[in-house]
Image (cartoon, rainbow, N blue to C red; front, side):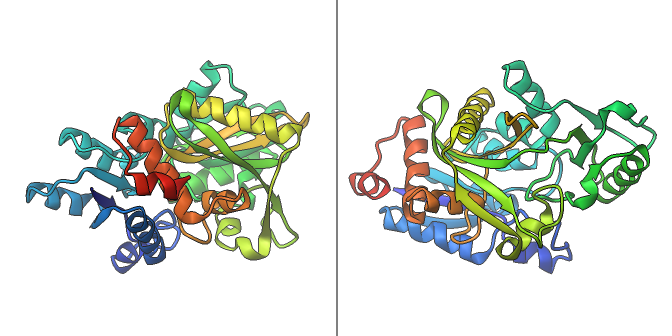
Length: 336
């Protein structure tokens, strides 16, 4: 069975002049090689395709695949993660992970929070700041936490994201609006524990594979899981698998959000607890990083006793089940 592999190689974009932060969500050669090796180990014939432009060229040349393992993030717009799935849908080609609707919805953090809120799932109150002319919130609404509306990997999040006064709010909003050229999400700051929950599957067949608590050390940038904290996690952050009552509630909340947003095959849901210890939905990553050593989902899986190749196998198996394909026997055994 032939599997194509779509991705955005970070080095390609750095060579074009994009910055380290602009390319933070893109993949390293180690990630591509790791996924390819895992898929080959499962018995598949793997073809590297590359980014959305390379996919367009391959499709125009008549190339087709039984399934595409898609980790391409895209570069432009709030629907950038939907570009590859939309193209594959147009050609009737099956793929891993979520469809264009879910990819677009979840990248817009406010839209995702609205859907989650409508399902009765806890999420912090929020507003969306469209321009520098927007009025600051009332004094009683502070402290707030500010971040770009449609970014991942902690992009745009720093110690300045926590704002306690109107002047701090105006200053941080101005910086984020100018640097990221998109609206700003301002939500009530949650002072409790931070979790990320790994999930595999789709709909009622989806399941939690682990709840990981993110603990910040003395060297960590204050207030949250910022871009710098993620980039330098070895010195700033520690991870542990959590199984207490609050963590189990985080897992249930994450699974409810995953199903409400119709996410597929595998990914992560991020949560943070309020002052009473109630976990609240922050955001979902339906296209989670899969670097063999440093990506949160991979670290979480490893803590839960799931090695890298088995994690890739479980994702592929979930996709096969969703597409009603028969998983090869060797692949099914390897992913167990």
